[in-house]
Length: 150
Image 1: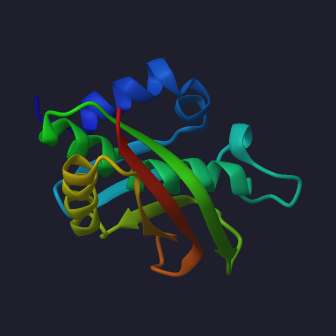
Image 2: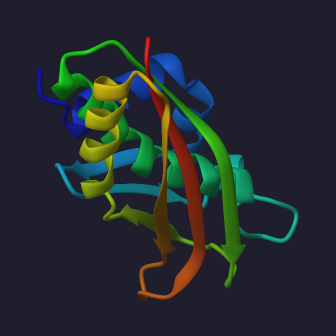
């Protein structure tokens, strides 16, 4: 079964309701990239009239994790996934619609193949960049994912 934005957004509504309520939505996904957006609204704001950093983190993590889920499904194996570490930097107040893009999908297949072959857990870092409607970077998140055969 191919993963689509509609299926991922339904998954988010059912399994990650806090992200759904905050407006986090997958816009596109393929083998190498994923785009997730979220709009600054009352429910996801901080006291400084911008988007709360954790909401940005949810959108950024989904832009990386959705591709990991897709890679695991494509492998046909039972593989666990987990964020082991993350790093974030913020360069501008997040106002309006923020779009997080991850272009690191190429890293997933190698890690999955290696964990299947060796039975050992594998780690890899994926980066998601959040930009506002003017094309200015508002935040950058890096996630260290681990995958391991169950």
